[in-house]
Image (cartoon, rainbow, N blue to C red; front, side, top):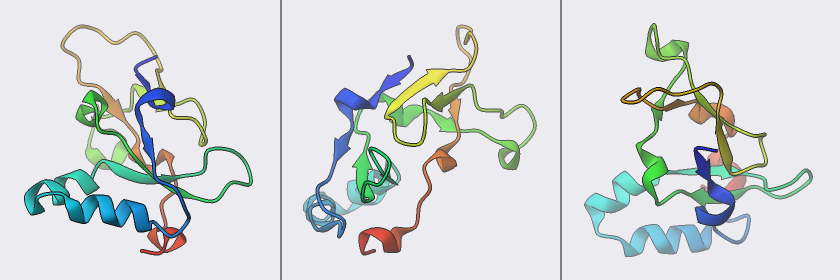
Length: 115
């Protein structure tokens, strides 16, 4: 287990993202811009509405992996499934190795949450 979002991620209520917008607009402008990079849409279980979810812990330091980012950038961490906030290593990660995940693992269509 590399990241347990089940206990640390923030799930904003409602499908219209009003609480998420209130949170983002309450932040200093420079931080708000960076902070939105650490948010995504996710259903927490099958048949659920999409929610805005935020990771505001060290997990935001995981970088993007995948073929589109170049050779050697294969993700070594992925979520348990599309509903889970738990991210697991796909293999042993050695000391000083970059932790890479596929941020497209959670489908994102901002219009689904009113954005």
